[in-house]
Amino acid sequence: MSGKVVLITGGARGQGRAHAVAFAQAGADVAVCDACAPFDSVQYAPARTQDLDQTRNAVQQLGRRCVTVQADVSQAGQMEQFVAQTVAELGRIDYVVANAGIWSIGGPLWTMSEDRFDETIAVNLKGVWLTVRYTVPHLLKHKSGSIVLTSSVAGTRGTQNIGHYVAAKHGVLGLMKTLAAELAPHNVRVNALLPGLVNTDMIFFPEQYALFSPGEPTRDGYLATLDRMARMPGRWSEPDELARGALWLCSPDAGSVTGLELKIDRGASL
Image (tube, rainbow, N blue to C red; front, side, top):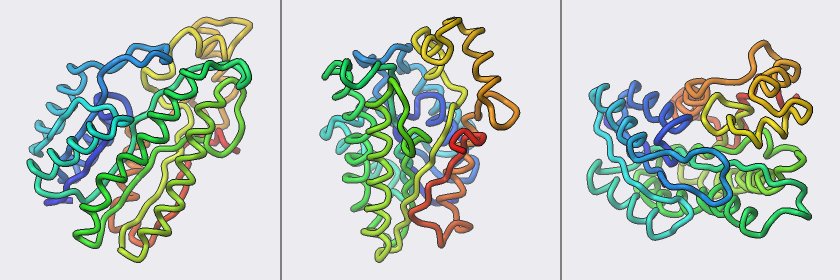
């Protein structure tokens, strides 16, 4: 991917940082944004600007250029500026990984607060749309490119107590399929990653423990429940496994692949 540029949202840590490192290892220059700020409905600690700095350092240590911007994907003006800065500093955009997302436990849909529902939809669905809205015109200039949208196995089924998240991730798949059809004549491919549980900060907080292990709402009880749930040995996937999936979807090896739901979930969706 030498000479190419990838734009990644939600890249301060976790899956986003893994994407940045994987593309840099493949030779691409990288642009990364992250809100690096708390969200009212989110129950785990947010990424920090220092985390965004660490992503930039990891990319630069691989000899690649890296643009980092503090931006909230749900805010149109911030995303427009991020994309403009990427093109100004790196010259182009070839690949887009719309990875940014938040996670919260909300309870049954009829008891969920409007603010919690709205915030998840804004980041996890509208944020994906804004990302493609401002990046697609740059891909069209080259009549090539690849877009990867991060959905979830929750985008394929109903799951209790996280209906806001389920709705958003179903919506991401709808965006992916529509974009794949709209952009195919322009030689731009669009696919989706569907992770299950991934070993990031997003899955370790007390409300998560109580959801998965109500009889023993502790970290140990949570881990024991995951052991019983596992389809394959191991409780979760690692971020770099998702990054390798995104890298493949953007590579020439996937040149005929568009509209794909790539599940990397250790069989959780079976």
